[in-house]
Length: 158
View 1: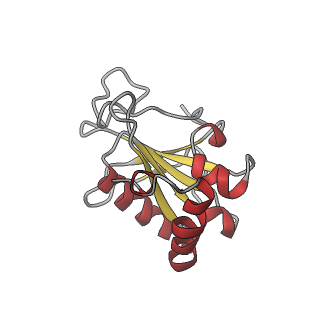
View 2: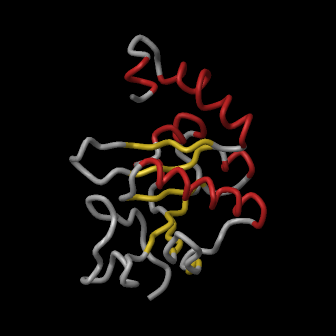
């Protein structure tokens, strides 16, 4: 279940105070999963990297557990080494495909919890992954993600 479902009488501000801020204090960020109930592909994003002057990270079309693993891994990398550049291709690693970094054109349109924390002005980068055949979502042959992989911004390469 989700926090809001388990706490029907509580507000979004209660969620920030009781759940989001404590996780950010403890870990430096938290992962917010969004399950659209099948109407659209699910997605997940970090909240808290903005506090360190870094962009939030987003992934679409993966199940919640896989999204959380991926975002936690890359958030650690971003905190240690700084954010990747828009258009940069991050090479495949054991258990992960290659990723291309795409800036979100309007992060506030998708990342509601980040908007509640930071207002409308924050940056976000999507980690767009290739499928098992090396195809990207902007290629006709792409077959990947649970229900597809929407790209929420414009590519800066290709």
